[in-house]
Length: 334
Image 1 (tube, rainbow, N blue to C red):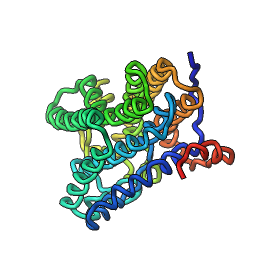
Image 2: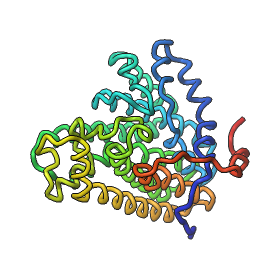
Image 3: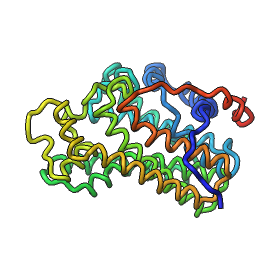
Image 4: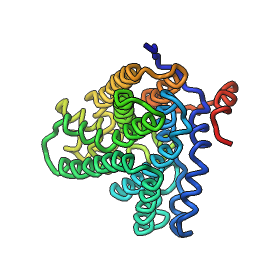
């Protein structure tokens, strides 16, 4: 059985993923009217979801067999992000004004719908059903979140369920469909799906920490943005569950952040991210992946989750290594 450690991923994994899916992604965009294409091309994705799909395929067989799946998942993620920004009225994404701010609500909604159509067009019928189930999970998560936020009681298990529904469904789907495209057995695909599910929820814990404490340099969002809007994110819910009524007063956002930290909300989120990463690696191990892809998957999982916690304290640029550019040249289509 493959031994898997948490290692740093080659710095070219995301660049490799971008190179794999950029051409089909741009070809899909070229079919859209100019006004819609302007919106969908506005934000540049990080291609981490595509990387999960491609590396899941690479763990089993040939990553190139999952290019259309990886493309579809990137389009679906972009669709979800446009809707998420609209629903939360988030004013920025990736150090830019959000698409609805730049183009208006109607154009953002139309672009999101177009992205979903393009995503489904990349997939087989059975793959569409898997992706559709993931997107319905995201929608259900938003509905449950609205209902819970209107209640006074706090049930941390419910909030974790909603966080998983909203933020794990697409990463789980990417890993499952990527593995199946490369010929995985049902058991292998299920383990890789669980891997993606845990990575998605771990990332949500870290994102919520960064949204409070990291600031615009790291997140592209104003410092304490979630606290200004009095959102019940995971650090807030954890602090409330520990007995601290975070939003009972009209304290300034900085004071609320200190209150959450003192109540253990930040530490709890970071510990949960570590536990989820460890569980994800257990599922990866049980899938019996090829060693190199397993190392890259484990490294990518750490890079998008626990490794980012330090950014809330000492943000630092990532310096690409000099030795990795050649490592994937043979696996990138020309």
